[in-house]
Amino acid sequence: MSMYTGLEIRVPFCDHRLVEYVYNIPWALKNYHGKRKGILRAALQGLLPEDVRNRPKNPYPKTFHPDFFEASRQLILDLLGKPGAPLFHLVDPSALRQLAAHPEEMSKPWFGQLMRLPQLFIYLVQLNMWLEKYRVRLRV
Image (tube, rainbow, N blue to C red; front, side, top):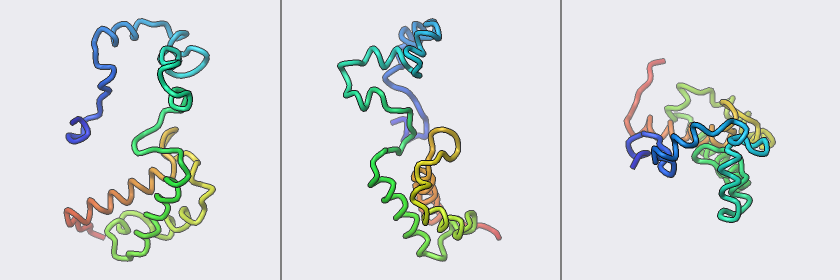
């Protein structure tokens, strides 16, 4: 419901008593074992698979699976095959081609710690779809 309206919320942590309690936990506990959300990770030991419990924070959509990397790269290559795409009034297609030509760049950070090249590609494909759907014409 929240994403439908463009509102980002954290439903599992919406109980005000939990928020008030956690707000008052000292940083040393929040950073338990030198990990962000360390106390939460410790509390979930045995309840979540270890790879889920210990994975780094990530945005949506995000996966660490190599097929996602390749699928996002293929989507941008498909878009590059459409020279009239409205996105190319905003983004230089040759720069995108250069990025897509170097799969080893896929895991380097873009826009802070969370976004990587696959997320950038997905974002650009979605932006192009929006521009097409609403027939946005950009002045050049």
